[in-house]
Length: 376
Ligand code: ADP
Ligand code: MG
Image (cartoon, rainbow, N blue to C red; front, side, top):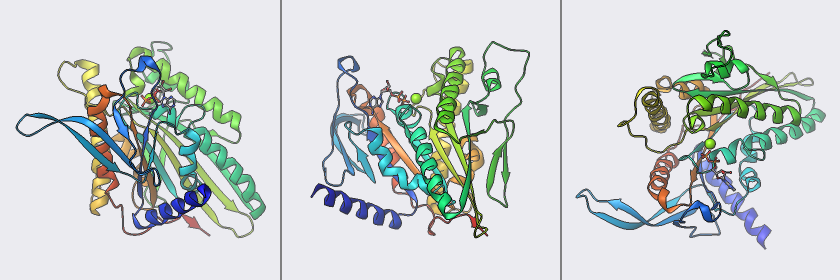
């Protein structure tokens, strides 16, 4: 019976997706991390059949007259993961989307949320979406060999910090990221280059690694995390103040039919979404604050412009959206995870995140279905 219900839910879910255009929003609430974590907020999941709703109880809200009241709020997304959900459950829900990069789609998956809400755990930890996605892609590639398809898979890992790109896979990335070591060797700047005709993006001076084994993925994640940590010694909490973007390019070729197909999977761990105040911040910190606020706002603007079907989409207003231009809207598939902390002290940020995510959820990107990039 449970299996039947689950199947029905999935069919409904997929149908719904077809109707909705191609941006999806899922919410994940991280578990409490033990007694030291603080007081839990009242977050509940009203409908455990569809797992699509989340309710936040007793959140404080200020009226326009300045009066503070406590209210309950309900939100609905494509899927909601309660604290008991594991990374495996999350991956099960997105595996089809990941697979579609092999069919020639550009896919973009974001983790949005305040610092400490579980973005990095979901995306780049050892059992997060990055290793799971790459593993599943190998398996599929080896099955596709029987149908005469061969693929190359190349990964790069880029940090966007203060509106500059840094390579997380090369030691130079570290230097340009501000380490005191090796000052003699100046890293070359990373620049975004678009090929308008092929709708392809390349980043200059950025290392790409052939990811043809699980070991290579693990080594890559380790190097990226070490480079992030070194950069973080100069600027505290840097990893919550920068975006990290894992880009997997998949190029397939069918020897029997001559078909070629190119797809890209982008997995993005966004900077903490907490409202950063300009006051009190000076120098570097001020610059950081401005660029995070700016780039997250730009991402919202791009999604909004795509939803309106506007002719002008302001991709170029931030490095992140410029980098992801061909994977947002148009021919691509987008998913946003809104990550939520279970703590009472974070309720205000939680509400802000859920409201932002609701706006994104109500966006219909494009009227046409996403199209594959396949050429004979
Ligand atoms: P963020 O990247 O959003 O700042 P993290 O992913 O670093 O947040 O998560 C904050 C803390 O919570 C980390 O110690 C992480 O291991 C833990 N955590 C987050 N999500 C989960 C989860 N689903 N299960 C267990 N621990 C989690
Ligand atoms: Mg993080």
